[in-house]
Amino acid sequence: MTQNVQEYGFQAEMEQLLHLIIHSLYSHKEIFLRELVSNASDALNKMRFIGLTEKGFVDEGQELRIDISFDEKEKRVVIKDRGLGMTQDEIIQNIGTIASSGTLRFLQEMKKDPSKKAEDLIGQFGVGFYSVFMVADEVTLRTRSYRADSVGLEWKSNGKGKFTIAEIEKPDRGTEIIFQLNEAGEEFANEYQIKSIIKKYSNFVDFPIFMGEEKVNSVTALWRKNPAEVSDEERKEFYKFVANDYSDPMGHIHLRAEAPLSYSALLFVPGSASNSLFQRPDEYHLNLYIKRVFIQSDSKDLLPQYLRFVRGVVDTEDLPLNVSREVTQSSPVMAKIRKALTNRLLKQFEDWAKDDQDTYKKFYKEFGSLLKEGVHFDFENKDRIVDLLRFKSTKTDGAELTSLADYVSRMASEQKEIYFLTGENIDALRRNPNLEYFRKNDIEVLLLDETIDDFIVPNIGTYKEKELKSIDKADLELKESKIVTPDGTDTKTKLSFLDKVKEILGDKVKDVQESKRLVDSPCSLVVAADGMNAHMERMMKMMDQNFSGVKKIFEINLANPIVANLLRLFQANENDLNLREGVTALFEGALLQEGSLVDPMEFVKKFHGYMEKATASRIIG
Ligand code: ADP
Ligand code: MG
Image 1 (tube, helix red, strand yellow):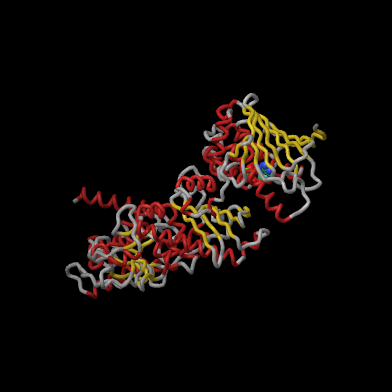
Image 2 (cartoon, helix red, strand yellow):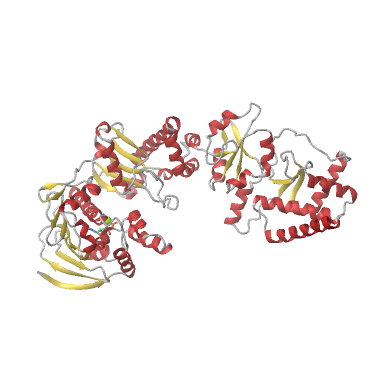
């Protein structure tokens, strides 16, 4: 008996989404079952919670369970839960509009990059309820809210723009989803298939799932078991369930503590970083349970932000069930658990670094950049995190990395500082002329090619009492290298040449000096002791158009043939136009090399001018 049938239109976005889902050639269509069971489980979790805090509702005391039935002849699936159900407003809100953040983000991603396959995105976000339209042409949802005055309601839709809601006779609480598998769902149209999909995806759902008399899932709070009694297989399966991941985790930590705090935790490091990990600093993946009752998915309060890639479950006895978001945020219990988990995770990474370098390398490749955030934000563990960092260096090739400890162990006894150079491109870094001195003297330099490096180096400051020092700073204590002066020049001539170069460049530079760090190259730019390095400056400019930066010191190498030629020109005629042009070109070349030449086109034009002169002189000569 249905009464008062009312018709509604889907929100515009919802229609787009439905269209996408129905028409996507998604190869894991079976997830529709996982999504519906997970919704049933969510509804039961909420009901369990309500049962503990409220009184006088529909079907009080009824067992919390899920029942799935399949009629082979009709190909009809019914998924029934004794969850909290929905009122009419709730149906419209939850099913008719894009309420769930997962769904909304799914659409945003699709709009941003339509070339992305819907398939990847469905896998990533889980589009929930609507995924059933991949395998059904029409879906009926019958529901009754737990609230004492609620009525039975029936929602129906074919997923094409409209849905109806009608009042029905429904004595029991909860929700039933009913649909007939269409051609696309043909492959699932037998009881055995349905059972195995439930086992595959929903084995760890915290409520019994029945098919007829048979309970098909295992219903164990795995994290509460003795770690020794959990098999590898079970753990992996559980990971795939909680993390919604198809592949195995990289590692896990299973913790059970009793005093002073009582909690258990089963944490996983995923096999790889998710696509959104670095773009979404607010995306966490730990679920909070209190006394086995599910409280919060993706809790932000159980781990520091830089460990947000960790997935799993934390269950504690020490919080009241009716905690609010505000309470979990400021609770000393949560803070203590968070501290313990952080500690334990860092310990795990340290163990990998020490005993299982292959795993550590994999781990660092995926999550190393996030650890660097920890140097900045986790003051308490800063030293431990710094020890976990790995960097490229002039003494490692390609993708090999070194720790600061290893760097220090390779330092010669007279070396006082840890040298580094930052920039965004490792090839350009390896060719930086400022490295010449260090190469010649066999001194190692760390090559920092991640944007975040510029921010964390000042946080590190010193390591084992050795200061981290950028090699493009003017105040490096370099051994006096043999200074070559071209024939027929004395110190006085040399000094007045340097003055002349300075006069030519005027206020474009802070100073002109003879270089001790260059071996082959004619010149380079270095920063005064208190200035910021070139990479940092470039980033500041990116953030602030008006940021003018600081003037550099122009170092020239008198052993270089071009510079030697310029010195000769200077000696013959200090106002020679070629001298002026040559000095300017060298300076602009140095700017180009460090990535801060404002007008490279103009530079190329001048360069063509020199080419013309050079080629002409060959013909005449
Ligand atoms: P999500 O589960 O990510 O919120 P879904 O599309 O799966 O997104 O579900 C949308 C909403 O519909 C849920 O948040 C819930 O409020 C409601 N809902 C779906 N299925 C049920 C159910 N079986 N019982 C009660 N509410 C449900
Ligand atoms: Mg859902």
